[in-house]
Image 1 (cartoon, rainbow over the protein chains, first blue to last red):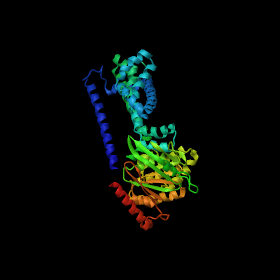
Image 2: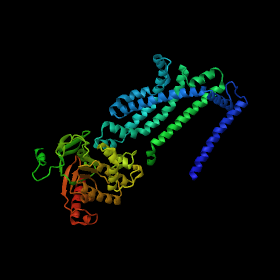
Image 3: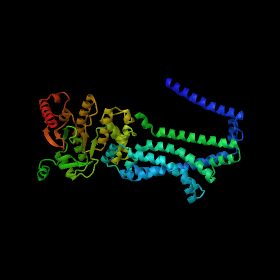
Image 4: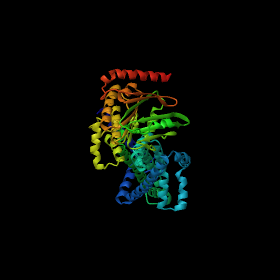
Length: 257
Length: 267
């Protein structure tokens, strides 16, 4: 009861802070401390947001970005978990492959974009490749770690039960690594969103990135801000959804704490 | 070599040993852990293995499980060379917390062994319930291991091992981490379970009283490298009783003999 009340108090406090930031923003805009050409108030941004959705423009752009993000992230997840599982479950693979990964991992994905454009052109395929390439690292590295950290005793249990290799992967290793894998997937979600926007800007693909770029070029600051707000919301909502999925899938972990 | 091999030839009127070590030597990382160990365990026998820490008790058990292969010599199970672990041989590990799947409930952990044995899904729930009842965990099917006490987790591990319907049960200091009362209760339960199933048992422990209380035979190992130092037949009446068995003159005589051996081995 008491703990509940504290939680609500903190929640109310964080809303108050957010509200005061918006109020401050409105104040700066009203006082024209920054030219209205560059900084619309929250009122104008909101109006633009509502207008964008009512005529369907913004909805289409949002759908485009979500599509890029989802395909790239899913491709990265499937490939990352598969490759991570292969590398992580073998000590030899870890020894041979891990150093190369350490070299590739810190490579900025933006450096890959010109290569991808040269090979694939300004296409959806290029965007998919770049997003997946950027988003694969957190998932793959987390999966490698998760597979390497499986309790050896459990493998002995599996051996004494004469479980098949496939059964060991799906009943022992994968569930054991799932907390790591899901954490990696959550990190990758943010990377996927960032790269979706970058690819849309660079390749002129339909999406919020493109909308933001065009609005800025046309000095439609209210539209620009509407797009930025929508991108922020997209990041927030996907991350909350992922956390909820994690919570559900890892309910067994709650018992351990 | 020839001498040791002879020990386990089938003698008319005597059953073939279910597990037979013949001149087994095991080296790990250049160190000899076990040297020239020869040992036969009869079907249905309850063999206890004691010894100071580092004498290779657990290693010997892992050889019996097929988790290790000997550097030289051979380990046979039912007259066949042991090349890999097998479902007829179940192991109860000491660290029950690590040997259970934390993401599966008690029922799910027992189910793992049934799934591995190829039991159809429809038949599993009834069997799981029966096994959990056998080990004294009825009504805990939906609990995760982390929600159970140490004694309950060890019972759960025993239930999973029973689900393998093992011919041989290998137990590696299974009660070492439990308090005295829980331990005594589980000792009697294991004796009852083993008597009911007729399984052969190799039970490793550092508790000499426990070894004599449970076993038909107690083997004491000497360290560096591990080898047999003493072998005692335990001719105490069954069923054993926590009070009267432990007060039996024969129990006290064996206990004295075993203590003297361990003391001498440590010097």
